[in-house]
Amino acid sequence: HDGIGVVDGKGILSDEQLDYTVNRLYEVGANVKRAYSSSAYHNLDIYQLNTTFYSAVGNSDAAYLLARAIQIFAPGI
Image 1: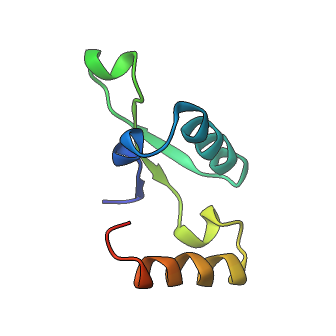
Image 2: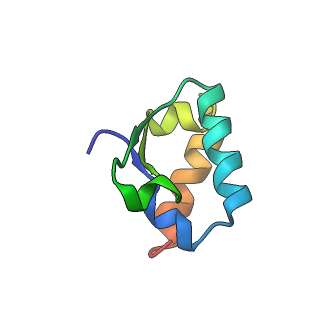
């Protein structure tokens, strides 16, 4: 596992939210690993975003700490 998985986001985020997230991460330099299959062709085909978590939050110490705090104190999210 080399990146941030996005497959599970399909059932949680709207298509617009997923598109925004992926495009925003492209802006900060993320690459993607795509799922190459015929069923994935017409759906969300991005398997994972190859970036660090810190880069994904814009290299912001405050955003990084907040995101990690949410992960720690809100298990299951």
